[in-house]
Image (cartoon, rainbow, N blue to C red; front, side):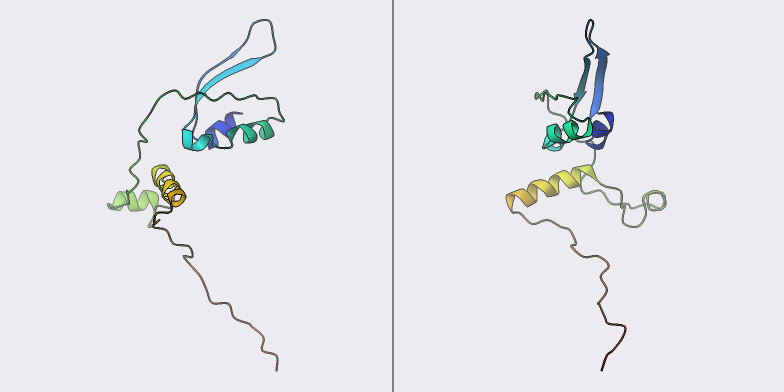
Length: 122
């Protein structure tokens, strides 16, 4: 259960065992964008033992700039040339743009090579 929440950028607020039963009650926060198909995934990962209940709680600003690129030498050394680590804000923004039919700035093929036959049969 904790792995599914971590993969979807969730935060566990509290986890406690209920008195008199074998029920374990976990309260966590999960971004709405990440909550799609959450119930199916958590049931699959816990073999049906977890029963999620999703309730909207509050708005929160994503703390990452979607247009950030590395500019200084330290940033290039830490993140690499293309900053391959996933930018959550950019991912969310591109998903919304794609869903609404707007233009998305992404390359479909980055390092393609022309396929060629090594043997020539005559």
